Amino acid sequence: MAPLTLFEKIWKKHVVHEEDGKPSLLYIDLHLVHEVTSPQAFEGLRQAGRKVRRKDKTFATMDHNVPTVDRYNIKDPISLQQIETLSSNCKEFDIELFDLNSPYQGIVHVIGPEQGLTRPGQTIVCGDSHTSTHGAFGALAFGIGTSEVEHVLSTQCLWQNKPKTFEVRVDGKRQNGVTAKDIILSIIGEIGTAGATGYVIEYTGQAISSLSMEQRMTICNMSIEGGARAGMISPDQTTINYLKERPRIKNLENLELLIDEWKNLASDKGSEFDKKIILNADDMAPQVSWGTSPGMVSGIDSKVPNPKDIEDSVKRKSTEDALNYMGLKPNTNIEDIKIDTVFIGSCTNGRLEDLIAASKVIQGNKVPSNINAIVVPGSQIVKIKAEKLGLDKIFKDAGFDWRESGCSMCLAMNPDKLSPGERCASTSNRNFEGRQGKGGRTHLVSPVMAAAAAINGRFTDIRSLDLDLGEY
Image (tube, rainbow, N blue to C red; front, side, top):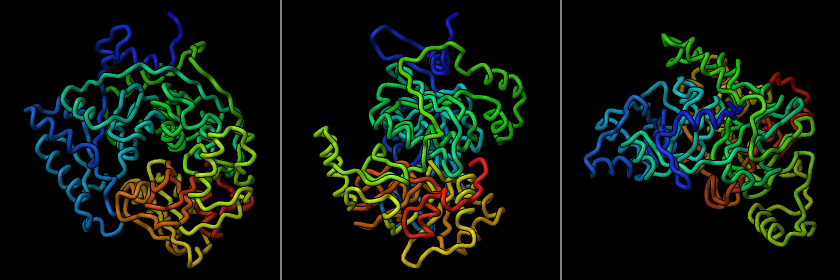
């Protein structure tokens, strides 16, 4: 038998029906639901008189609209309606919901792995583009639209065009202070925001296999920002060590059998990809986005680009427009850019390891009075664990706000928003115009870079602080 990639193994196992030249019907193992993209889907079921096909494979949480301060006081009427509608829909259709009263509530892409709902070899969907996060476990995970949410609820299947495969190999060893976030921003800067359109990326190489599971989730989370349908990493012993202690996995009677299956999922030696690039982590610096797409990114030791140096007229115009929106002058040193706000959180960088690393930068320092800095744990479990470690005290003593879990300032669908012209160092995944609030200016960075910016009021090369960040 010809060697197969991880993607090919999962796809082949989940095809229910296929014909040449047409989309394939895939079986879906796990369907994650939140309050924003599900109301119309449930209403469609109701109107058609249908039930949820597999309640045991469907799980819901509240995250996008949830306030991170005074969380039960939802003042926006649309947000409140979406929260209340999810609650009533889950009750009517008998779906397990991690609501605001649940100790397990959190961002959908944080709680799936945390609870052990996410497992290698699965097909996973959610009405959210950053579902690619779950691919860190060797799953085929991707975002879907509202009509597709209804289709999966009612049939547990989904029509999909088969993507091509793209190997992104990252060799070498990261410098201290160069994080998983910097790796993925470097990749997107290299291939562009459409570089992986029509493909599923598998991330390989020494720099990837050396990452923890939480760091791997950061990599796969932003695959969509490179245009990919999904991002994946072959499961290995690191994956198994993380999963075997998860609440929904550790007591399974067939756990040893599952582990054997997970080990066999990795791409076979000699398997071929439709496209391939090789990058070296030794060459990577901490990254800061300067524009209005994740591909507009530079090393902290670089300058803001000058449109006059760009020959391509389309690229030159987009750079000019981005700099105008961001209020930046060409050739400005990245380290000279001052910030107003710092946001540490999101499904990209709101996990415990992220908060621990950021706290090492913050400890013993003070945030200037003119900087608004907030930390938002990705889930209530992350919050509780962080507080047991005393991280909340470190952040609060430095002048950060310590919040409840939720999507928060990542997408401005809740009270955490930027004001027009406000400049933010953000650990989230998107820096589009208005993404964090109308007129807001977003710079994507790692948690440790965000922490350093909070202390200094401007972007600072984390490597110059000479901190031991361990394996982060």
